[in-house]
Image (cartoon, rainbow, N blue to C red; front, side):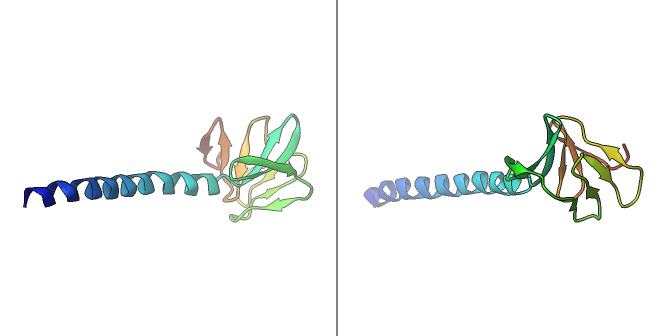
Length: 108
């Protein structure tokens, strides 16, 4: 009987390790997918896909909350005052502005 207990230990340990890795890896993929939007970089608007530059922004965009982003970085919120993105700022597809990696509300 003792031999069987020790034989199942490595299997249980590997299974636990696999589950732990899956739990850690899935949120990071979801976070990267949530990093779609547009970013002001060097005075020009860039498209962002999964947190990485995907090329220059070549047309006006409407975000899921109705916010419009113009080619010059002007942000026209559906409800509220307009603003302008500064270098390093990003607006997510849901209309939230990221500044230094932190989401900001729409009341700026």
